[in-house]
Amino acid sequence: MVDGPAPAPSLLTVAEKGERLVTLDVLRGVAVMAILLANLPGFAFPDPAYSNPMAWGGTRPIDLGAWFLTETFVNGRMRGLFSLLFGASTLLILQRADAAGLNGASIHLRRMAVLFLFGLVHLTFIWPGDILTHYALVGVIALGFVGLSARALCWTAIAMAGLSMAMGWLECFGLFAAAARDTPQSVALWDLYQLAFGTPDPARLAPEIAAMRGSWAASTAYRLANNGNPLFDLIQIGPDTLSAMLLGMAALKSGFLTGQWPRRRYRRWAAFGITLSCAAYAAMASAVMASGYDVRAVALVELFLNVPFRLIGTLGYAALILLLLRPGGWWTVRIAAAGRMAFTNYLATSIVMTLIFYGHGLGQFAHWTRASLYLLVAPMWGLMLLWSKPWLDHFGQGPLERSWRAGVRAGFDRPR
Image 1 (cartoon, one colour):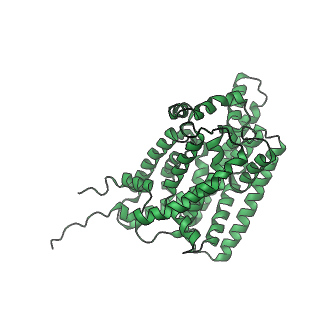
Image 2 (cartoon, rainbow, N blue to C red):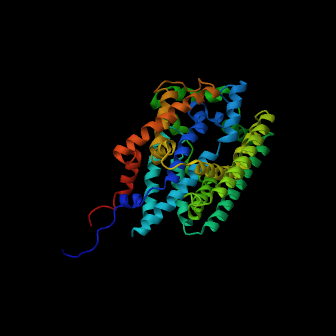
Image 3 (tube, one colour):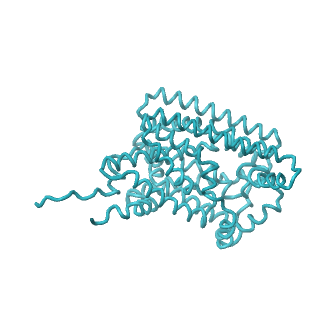
């Protein structure tokens, strides 16, 4: 045998080297399923109804109760769990790439570039609530922090959360100042926040409703004209997302996400994090209700007050899920499979929901009440749990996961 240089390791091999961490798969599976609870109003209603139940969706006690329960137990924490796991996965892939002799940073940047392209397609042609473009941009920034210790990552995450709160307070201060509406500029700013967090006149919502009930071309044209700039989102909510990603890296380095902590520590974190977070969110939702769903109260909660409780609740839910995990059990296996295909399941959820609510499907946009939306949860969860494992058993990867890896791998496995 002729000696020669060893072939470059395959990126696919690096990504799958060693056993998968079932804890991460299960957490990711819970996140991709539970985030539907928060996103349903975004699929079915005009934009301000996502944060303010008085904007659309009914004012019956059952509809307002559905909003209150979602705020108390779900809102923010499932997105936080996604962000936490994104940070942990980033660190894990970098570590495995470097251990295999590859340039982990280069691979990561390729992953973010491909993810950004997927996100642009999702944002433009499917659903404007996309998070993939945002994660790709924040993921590039997160690369600069991977060398920090777990403790340093925690402190940096806290600092980023503080920065997010400071920026949110500045926005709220501007809104409060505009409440007088005594200048054209203050009127314009007030109206802008009403469209985001308030209860605008139904006539202001009519163009969005007509576009979403119209053809796919009409809804796409509306999205192109009204979608936010991902770079603006990076400035506005980037520090908040980065704080959760850095916390995910710290949680992986500390052994929290791999189930290495004593069970009593997980129990303490679950009890503390979930109790404090849910109590705080319930109090904030009650304050919003007491204000008559005033736009200033909604914005203060969404942009400022809920930031620390979102992070605390995210860790509490993660601890609870890890406590309930039973390796080899039916639920664990099925949820882990949904988590291994989280990218595919996330986009598949958008496709299914937009086919229900948009005009190129059943055209149900702005027709349902808020409470009735949650009738869709069990069927969608059932689809994820039933199809993910058989698909993985047959193909080994989800279809979009395979496409993502193929896009990243291009250039690494070429003959040299």
